[in-house]
Image (cartoon, rainbow, N blue to C red; front, top):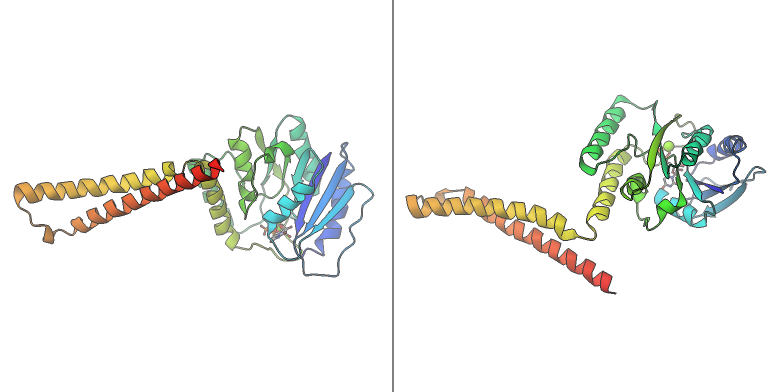
Length: 294
Ligand code: UDP
Ligand code: MG
């Protein structure tokens, strides 16, 4: 069975059209499908009646807006399918691409992400996406071109042990990749938004990036915080130590008076800050250890 999860917030005009498009796409699929609509506390009442003869529909509602991540995770909890599909409700993703995703899953891939190939965005957005893509490639070893594309399909087992929190759903593609699942990307048709407003707006470009980095950090270092803090702290500490040793050497052997050397301040500062950062790492280790013991 296939579970299609559709988080929405104030998308009243889009939902009936989306439903029609989904029905058309699902009619071409052999497996049984269910659509899980998650109303993230929409304010644009009156409520819609979502009905379909082609697939089963579930509707979950949040009392207030809890964010897309929460909506997705609630949808996942109700999903009966072995295969999960995330699709936005704003008609920017084209349900006609659904069979292409499933084809890849049939070919043995565990996680299929979309690439918004012909994005109808400004040049600035494109430059930004390009930068983000290379940054992620270089620093977090990301194999993806368009990690932020909301349209994706994957086997449910990929979510095993994945903890949804905040906006870390953006990290899911990397999670799948790091955990050894077979991942791939396919180009999808990306359409401009016609009804309603973008919920994330421009600030998404910055926060989305931060969210991915946070999630990466937690994934990489939450079991060994000292590796992260220790490295930074050690580099600062050693730099400070070398500076001060050099100053001490000149003071002792060449009688260069220290009160005329501003570098002394830098050296002292680096040593103190370095030690503090290392200590933060040690406290981090302690927290992890105590949590494991429980
Ligand atoms: N969305 C949601 N809760 C939120 C923000 C967004 O359920 O707090 C839904 C929204 O209705 C849409 C999808 O998430 O179906 C993607 O949002 P949007 O299209 O506004 O984002 P953009 O395409 O601008 O990144
Ligand atoms: Mg959108």
